[in-house]
Amino acid sequence: MQLYSFFNSSTSYRLRIALALKKVPFEYAAVNIRTAEHRAPDYVDDVNPSALVPAVVDGDFSLGQSLAIIDWLDTRYPTPRLIPLDGEQRARVLELSYLVACDIHPINNLRILKYLDTTLKVLPEQKSAWYRHWVKEGMEGVERLLEKYGRGPWCFGSEPTLADCCLVPQIANALRMGCELDAYPRSMVVFRHASEHPAFDAAQPKLQPDFVPS
Ligand SMILES: N[C@@H](CCC(=O)N[C@@H](CS)C(=O)NCC(=O)O)C(=O)O
Image 1 (cartoon, protein in one colour):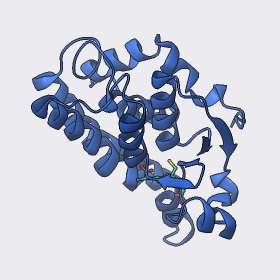
Image 2 (spheres, protein in one colour):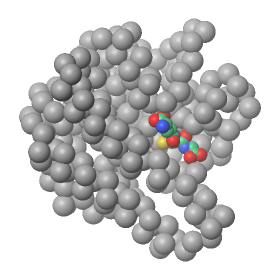
Image 3 (cartoon, protein in one colour):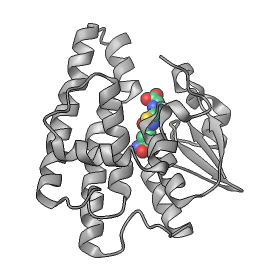
């Protein structure tokens, strides 16, 4: 299996964690989104019609969208399961995962920030205020969910799930962008716990083959 990934992409990071937790071997195919390699016709035609990272290719099968890929991995390599089968637990894990994946990540994605810069020509401090604002709104929701329903060292229990695969890269990104996260103690407990786990460690941006310090 090939994983098309960019070291600093938090959606690729979700998938790297999932693959490491499941111990699925893969070849790392670097796609530099800073130089728009994800928009190259060969990549879009052959790998990911959405023109985004991540994507996987397994023989004749290719798939984009990190959550769809993790769901596919769960059916193909069910141990450990990342999306629980039990109805309520499954719903809770998806609730938090979608909050990160649908409500926080997309509005702070590279192409949105570039649009703010190059088309709307906002000032750097306005772009930074945008980023922090949406992280704050989203993380407040995450924290309330975890306060109400979280348990154990991970988001929802004694084993990592899709929720942790989504939350940890989101927090790592927010820290990289200088966001203040002290107001989210429950979320930070999960983040710190995850940073001691070998699968989460191996998936870190700085350990990827295409890493370049910024
Ligand atoms: N919903 C997609 C989002 C993928 C996505 O937005 N990836 C980002 C990197 S984290 C990307 O390719 N950005 C390129 C761009 O914004 O032009 C997923 O979960 O896979």
